[in-house]
Image (cartoon, rainbow, N blue to C red; front, side, top):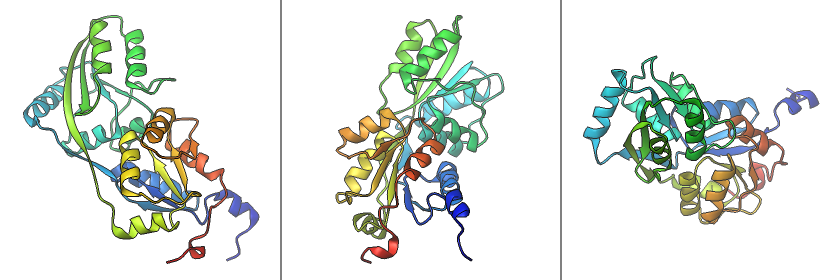
Amino acid sequence: MTTTPESKHDKPLDGWRILVPRGGPWGDGVAASLRAQGAVPVVAPLINFAATTDQAALDAALAQLADGAFDWLTVTSATTVDVMFAHRAVVPPTTRIAAVGETTAAALQAVGYDVALVPAQDNSAAGMAQQMIALETEPRRILALRSEIAKPVLSVMLTDAGHDVESVVAYRTVGVPVTERIRRDVENGRINAILITSGSVAEQVREQFPVIPDDTILAAIGPRTASDARKAGLPVSVVADRQTVDALIEAVSLFPLPHAADEVAP
């Protein structure tokens, strides 16, 4: 079937192969969005979560959460959502969920959790804390699920504002080695773009793909992630103007296809 100019315009990423650095429901959703734009998604999870070193504390916190002990639950990464999903965490209607950004909110919604708050502008732990403090003038009980390496900015700010915060380590972030085929495809240019969705992903991209062609598009989901990527030594090609998957895909689609898959060496 001949591709008309109109249908080609409808699929701006036709011919692209794009690396999606996370799996699970979030990765599946991104892959579907890329296919709708004509791209071939290459889902290659670069990070995963390992169990917290204090499983008893996490289990106790999730049991309290299910029992309605908290007014708010704060979620600062899509990986936290993976942990919640794996533990079948129950969030009662009386507990509102705050997500640090649109990516995390989308991950929550993808597995059935409702999101009550996403920072309007500053998609960071500090930005989320400021918005919650402005919203809640009375002391609230808050569960902050976090990674082992996260700085306690959110908990400190909320506690200083008079809230009762229980900060619990939900997971440790670990790298996931990609297959030799994917590493080779990145190195020889068969992957046209790599989506960078967090500082942890950026570190794995730098570590696992020491050779990335200059014309491969490295797309960061927001300014904070772009900053983390540059600190890791990655030459970021483009930064999405909004911290959403749609904005990230749109940012990539503004570039011409660097090279077609059949133009590079096998």
